[in-house]
Structure formats: structure tokens, C-alpha cells
Image (cartoon, rainbow, N blue to C red; front, side, top):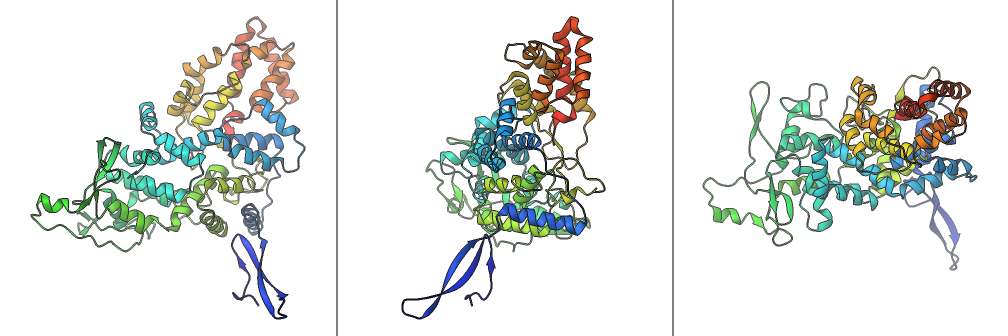
Length: 540
């Protein structure tokens, strides 16, 4: 019998076998046999959920659907016609896996995931703020995190400590710095992103519905950061931390007051010595040590932010749990816990065993997001058709692929690529879209009237289509086609990545025939109608 007395299972199965030693004495040897991959575990738990719910899932998506879906999710844009045709012509049985690996290694993936992480961590903002994020290295910091596939727990700690000791980490400061010493705003952004919990409702009282979220959690999280102050230094922007102050009380609805202790989500309150009354400046100097490098701002011997990292963040399973659920939502349309940033007792997971197992695998992988993404997009659930099966109504079953709107960045790249054959990540069209299409992971999708009006009337969008008149642009290539039927075919293949249905081909042909006297304008209108359609604007 194995020493452990049972079969162990993490990412490998371990089996003991007996062999005869040269000494003729029997001894046991531990032999490793590969266990189920993370993708296989996803398939198992999701299929078990279908069985429990007694639902039949959708059929698998076609290769055409898959290649468009994957490019949008991993590269942040639709594929070109050539990329689509190349994938469709690939005869390898495992061509989907090869495409996944290729896109995860691409620079497009770096830029796309950076866009998503920036929007989720920092929120949408005015265009001048995006320029500030780039100028102060926040953007490049996120890019290197994605490019190098750095462990998320290490990056989370750098962002929350905001005390870089080398040039590669300097951009991490901007997460706290941009919030301009608003310590409540800092706490209200940290809790949902890093821990998967919304705590705003606990500002004035214990959460009315979620018993485990207390008012002391809200103010305890504020206290960990309320000694920070934005300061411009020789090394650039820094959030300098004081060794004193920040001692306060909070009052509940009854008027009772309580000390604001350094505690969050059930962690034991930290004992922090309060300075004696009348302590002079010479004594205060003894509370600090020199920063790194030597001309950096000094650091408190007892740093509340450092204590937060060591006592609350490091080893906290919620750091992994929240990221796993968020990545699942990014790729699957909703989290295993929905909404993805309300992972509390009132929002149980749809597949608790799956969430647990993915969290274990994520931790064991060294908190590497690329492997998690790879495992999810290779799963059966990700590769289902978006056609909802008859009689299946619960999206939490993941019995069909959940459609979702393109982000501003996905939309801007895809419009540029299909209309002009190339794209720029900093194009004026992106800036316009980013201000209009602000959602990234909406809990539910309802097309706002303002979005429809924007696409119908905004001069920048209209001008972009009308001014795309160079020989390599779609408008001119359509004009050069010998027949209206060929024009319809090129339009549908370029914009929707599929051949036209007979009815579509006839509708476009009739439309163009009726406007032959001003064919260029008619083609512009046809392109506009397709770009603004649900088929283009949704990932499906």
C-alpha cells in the first residue's frame, strides 16, 4: 500500500507499484501517471452540471464561428479574410489548439488583455487620463505583466504596495496615485477587483443582506491605506506613507462609535502602537527607514500597506478565486459566480466544484493567467454554438455560448481592419469609441439608445467609412468587383466572415442596383449597416 494510504489527485495521479530490488527485497516506487488536464476537468464539471439540470447543450460551433470568436477573445479583433481562410484550410485535427497557442503568443493578445485589465482595474475615463496612464508607465507595466505572463499574486502585491524599488515596477504606483488620496475610493476599488466583493453598502452599517461583510471591513480596508499621500519625487509620482496618523472611529446607524482597526474580511486586527501625545519631530524620525533607492521617500518601520500585503493579501485564496472567476466571465460571458465581483454568500457559484478546482490549478500554476485562459478556450463549453437550445433558459448552465458586445477596443480594431485592412491601437476611432462604449463586462447586455444614436449619427464614424477610399480599402475593392453579386459576396465575407445566404445576396444586389447612379455612396451605406448590425457588434 502507498505510504499515503490512498490515491492522491492534484494535477497528476500518483500510483504506487511494487518492484523487486536487486537485494531480493521488495520496495515500493512512486510512479506518476498524467491526470486529467484543466480543460478536461472543465469539461467534466460543466457536463455534470448539464446532467444535474437535465439539459442538452448546444452543438459545437463551426470553424468559422470559432476562429472569429477566438480572435476577438484573445487578439481583441476579428480575423482577416486571409486568417479565416488559412484556419478553415488547415487539415490538422488539433488546429484549434494550435490557433489558441499562436494567439496567446501574439502581441495582439498582449495589447488586448492589457486593455481589458486597464479598464477593469482603473475604469473608463477621459482621454487625457489615458495619456497620463501611458506617460507614467502604468500602461507599459500592464503590458509587461501580460507579455511575461508574470504571476498575478506578485503583480497584485506590487500594485497595492505601490512602492517600486526598480524601474520595471514604477508603473504600479499609478493604481493608487490616480485615485488622488481618496482612501474610500481606493478601498471600494480594491475589494471587488482583488477580492471579488463589493463593500460599498457597508460604509454606514453592516451589509444588510450579506452577513459576512461588516462595517468594520469597510473602514478597516480604508485604514490600511489612509496614511498614503500622493507626492511628486525625483523618481516620479509616489504614494508616500506616513508613520503616524490615520487613527479614527466610525459610527453605525445607532450613533455608536468604534475604533477603526486594521482588519479586513475576518483577519485578526493588527496591534499598532499609537504615538504618545507630544512626541517631537526627532522622535518621529526614528519611526522611518530610508527608501530604495537611497533618494526615494523614506518608509515607515511599520507600514500599514506592507502589513496589508503580508497579513491579508499573501496566501489569501480570494486573490486567486476572484481572478479565476473574472477570467471565466471574460471568456464565457458571465462568471461561475454572477455578478463576477459579488462573490458573497448571497451569490453562490453555479459550479462550486469547478470554481474550486480552477482556483487550485491557478495557484499551482504560479498564478499564471495564460494557462488559465488556454484551458478555458480549449474547453467544450467555450466551443459551443451561440444558438440557445430549445427549452434551456438558464445562462448559468453554460449550455450555449453567451453572446456579448464587443468592447470599444475590439470594435475600433475590427472596424479599422475590415474597412481599411489594417489598424492602429491608438487611432482616433478608438478614442471616440472608448468614450461611447464604456462597458467591458456588463452584468447584462441591453443595447443603450445612446449607442444606437451614436452609430447612426456620429460624424467621426460616418467620416471614417466615407474617407476609406484608397485602393486597398474595402469600399474601393467592392467597387472594382464585376457584378453586384460579387460585391455582396465580398462585403459579407469581409465583414461577417461567411458567404452570403441567398436572401442576403439578393437584398444587397437589389439595393445596389437601385442606386447605381451613386454606387460609392450606396456601398458606404451597405458597409455602415453591416458594421452596426448585431452580427458584427457581438461576439457570438
